[in-house]
Amino acid sequence: MSKLDHFIGGMTWGWTGVRGTWNNEEARQSMALMVDRLNVNWTAITFAAMQAHPQATTIAYQEEPTVTDLEVRSMITEAKRHGLKVCLKPVVNCTDGTWRAHINFFDNDVPCEPKWSEWFASYTTFMLHYAAIAEELGCEMLCIGCEMVQTDRRESEWRALIQKVRAVYSGIVTYNCDKYQEDQVRWWDAVDVISSSGYYPINDWDQQLDRIEAVVKKHGKPFFFMEAGCPSRQGSEHLPNDWGLQGDPNESVQKRYFETAFDRCSTRDWVGGFMLWDWPAQLYAENEASSNDDYCMFGKQAETVVRDYYTLKTAEREKSIT
Image 1 (cartoon, rainbow, N blue to C red):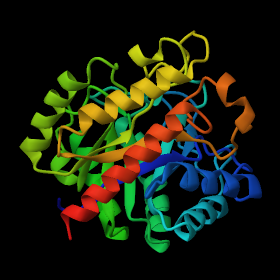
Image 2: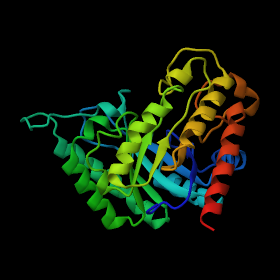
Image 3: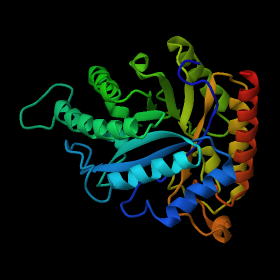
Image 4: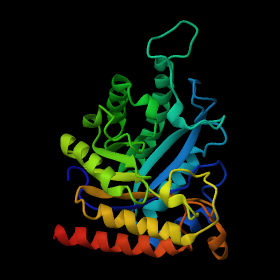
């Protein structure tokens, strides 16, 4: 596997990266518990910068509520102290609540209308800022975008951005496409590793893996799921990407979901691992785990499933290369 020669047993940490919630004892304890409970070998240090709405062209990455550079550096350093490999993952969100996948502009410029060129200029400045931090602190991977579905078609702009990123960052470059979009991105050859959000219904993994496998084989690139997860909520196993789904808390749903996802992915040797979703900087109390219906598996039944799988897969990969 070029540029990815080991299993990624990872967890997304710190979302959404609200200023003041990192670089404190509670955040450091959260990361320590993540390492101890899940036996992770990677983490994605993940946070959001804001643009006002889907047609805004300015990304305010140095302003509240985004975590400060000091906070970002401190938690990268903390992850390294735990022996983790780090993927730095800066993400853009819309202040008005619109999902980032809907950021979009006219393909042909129109006077007095916002333009792709303006947005990509701001996005490039944003990404290069964190690429420099990733290089400075030795982050093994940089994720240059997350679930930017409407932007995916802008191939030339993404290629230009990646070229500029590589001028300041020497590690692994990936892009996190959205679920069902793996075969829609036309510029996978420009990144080192293909990654996607694996929020697939519990009974649909084989069909989706068949589809993704064709993409991976076509491009000859390593692949892993940059996101994957399921709320511990009744019904979420059938629609795991819907964080607002109505249902009662149910730990067994999340447990069965991970058991199934891991089982089906284990039959595909090209799946290089997971960066599961997600582990916040400020954890709920462990004695409240059974009533928490979100994606985090701290103190829940799925915690053991993840730890056991990561331990097994890491041992298998180490054995295969010795």
